[in-house]
Amino acid sequence: MLVLTRKLMERLYIGDDVCVTVVRLEGGQVRLGIEAPRDVSVVRAELVPEREAAAGRLPRPARHREMQR
Image (cartoon, rainbow, N blue to C red; front, side, top):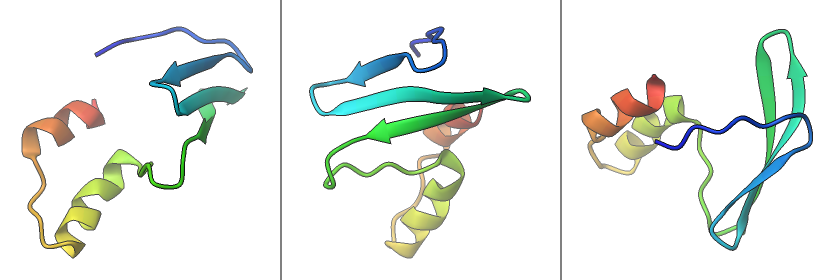
C-alpha cells in the first residue's frame, strides 16, 4: 500500500486517466474528488460486497479486510 500526504487541492494521478484531488478537509474528514473515464468503476469499499453479490460473484475476503483498515 502506498501512503501519501496531500494538502488541500493537491492531486495525485493513477495511471494516465484517473486524477484524485483533496477538495475539503473538515472535522477529521477528507473529501476527495475523483476524475476518471466513465468505463472506470469507482466504488466505496463498503459497497463492494453488495455489488459483487448482486452480480452473482463472491467477494474476495482478504482484499476487503485490507481496504477496510
